[in-house]
Amino acid sequence: MNGAGQRVRIFDTTLRDGEQSPGVSLRLEEKLEIARQLQKLGVDIIEAGFPIASVGEIEAVQAIARTVRGPVIAALARTRVGDIDAAWDAVHAAESARIHTFTSGSPVHLRHMLRISEDENVEMAIAAVRRARTYVSDVEFSAQDVARADPEYLVRLYGAAIEAGATTINIPDTVGYSTPTEFAALIALLRGRLGVGPDVTISVHTHDDLGLAVANALAGVEAGARQVECAINGIGERAGNCALEEVVMALVTRSDHYRMEVGIRTEELCRTSVLVSRLTGMPVQPNKAVVGANAFAHEAGIHQDGVLKERTTYEIMRPQDVGVPETRLVLGKHSGRHALRERFEAMGYQLADAEFLRAFERFKSLADRKKGITDADLEAIVHAEVVGAAPERYRLQYFQVTSGNNTIPTATVRIEVSTGEELQASETGDGPVDAVYRAIDRAVGEVHMLADYSLKAVTEGQDAAGQVTVRLQDGEGRSVVAHGVSTDVIEASARGYVAALNKLAVQTGQTVVATEH
Image (tube, rainbow, N blue to C red; front, side, top):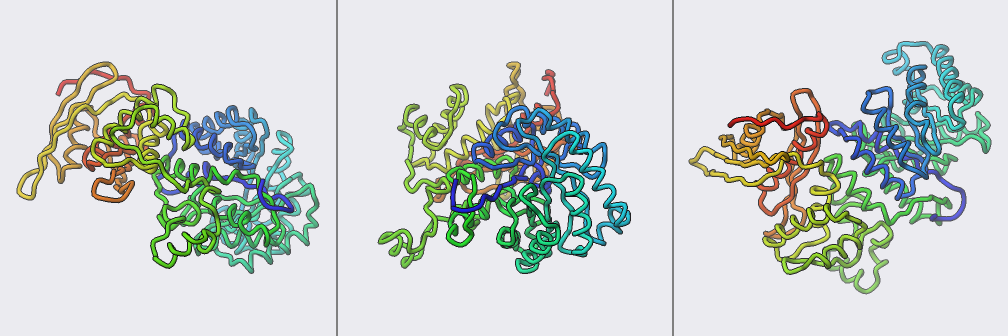
């Protein structure tokens, strides 16, 4: 618990609105991994998904509801009977369950998207909330695009939802149109006109299209909102959602101003940020507030001098408060299993023996090429080889690449299959990475589409480890994100591609068939 005063509940929508980020598609196991970390972080509500969207979505929400204890597990539903029923089917096993039903409030949405009248919209909202209340006592109601809606109509719509049994009314600036002053005024107006009592919570959900999501959410809190809907790293539709880590640390760091309490264990923020970034394939910009790589870095001489004399001269938060250690243990090729395991445990990773041996193997391989291994290297190894990895149906045994400015890039790869079979193939390509990927496809007997590829240095210097993020699609349109880490960018690329194949194999339930090459 942090701060002093009234409690602001943190509603995390990383697994619902966050996963709607273009190109993001999480497997059930990955969603569970994030949900467990959100539980560890201490969020009050986890919006686990939109069950009516697909069979896979309802299965993921059901798994989270069965597994995660502590936070309320919420499922999203339109104001339709089928949606409400699917939401209940998904969350009924939760320790604490919520149904979150939504419609729209603005004329542009009603006229062009829903194509219903204001009266019809109110009636559908009443019916949806009433049906949800037959399943759960905790019902949230939202009307999209409030910033472009008629406040008088919003009073009528939200009033009807409260009368029907809504216990939380959420005020979403769906397209990020509002400003803090406007948004605070709207919250205050609705709070006053609706006569909201202690049995109904006002919530805010803000988007970052104008870069004002966090500012608008905090303005909403000052105006009386006691729930903030946000996502880790601010991911979400278009420019994203209100960033959980930013709004939480604003409330904590400026508790003298806001006089609010939150139940977040802030020391878990950076670990949660790293996990979400790696599993979604969405990198965190270095200058990102709170969790960016440079958030507690000082390069200017004046800043360094000030921090050395007194940390608070240039740091308004302690790095440890968000999970960033001030000192980092540097490991090298002479380090043994004991030292590595202790470092992993200090970083919060409790690895099973098989997972640790896999991570140790990659650590040794990387340490042979680097003078020292940093925490960033270890984070990359764990999330590429353990946390974010699927069972190894395919394992990269060997690759060789011939390339040059006057040579057609050619690659030969050898892949070991979990059945013991070895697959080998050669191919040419537009470049060395393309040649390796074509050779891997030829070896496994299936062509895949590379939807996205990115390479970044995990650390600094000439011997920096490169982390490759691969987004791969199969012929059925299934998409996965995987990572590869190595000081050799071609090897990192190959490892990332094979890791993606393993994830696709899990999704499709493939059986390994021997092929000739």
